[in-house]
Image (cartoon, rainbow, N blue to C red; front, side, top):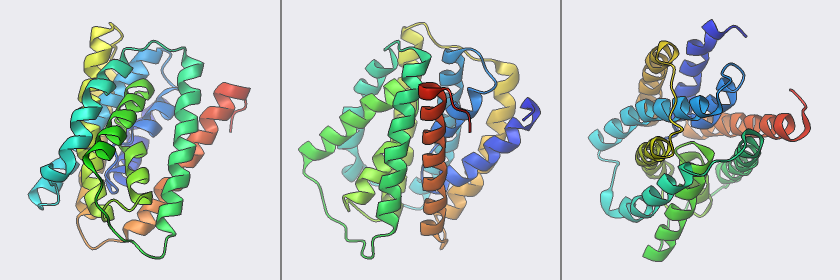
Length: 251
């Protein structure tokens, strides 16, 4: 695929991911790895794009009064420092993509399990559980180079923490703060790299796609259908990364 098609591809990714509260960083990483040689530039670009996509989603969730800081703050305060520290770890490119690929396969499987459940019953978590989940996923987000919402959201949905729209709003804010923490970690570790000539085109694409997806997520739209498609995409990307970087098989 010619690199000129990247903005269109990223528009589609942002549209699908933002509709369920994600930034799309996992797929950005996978696709950018086909075109960019610098491993650190790939991570930096994906995190910046995450910021633009979820900023729109966060604004829409706040405007529609879905965002609830009283429910969300424990997940956020424990994740930010660990995401910052995780981003400073220097892994080999193959190790990084194997960790990311395996995590995505599990996340996609959790998403599918959640969406096929017949009854969606919400329940509250204790403070310690929120802190543990936020911190653990924040660390994984920092190491993997994505915002972490794609890990947090399936787990919360599977554990019946709240309704899907509330979870999506938390995932959006979670990605926002942890992408910022991840970029700060990369900067401190002196691994922050970006190609502005490519970045601005991709930013425009994800802003448009993210805006449309965020609008759909707050309307009476079939989020189960979108969530199912997103889960399939997540699993495909994960399998592709594991096969490519673990066994040298391209699909």
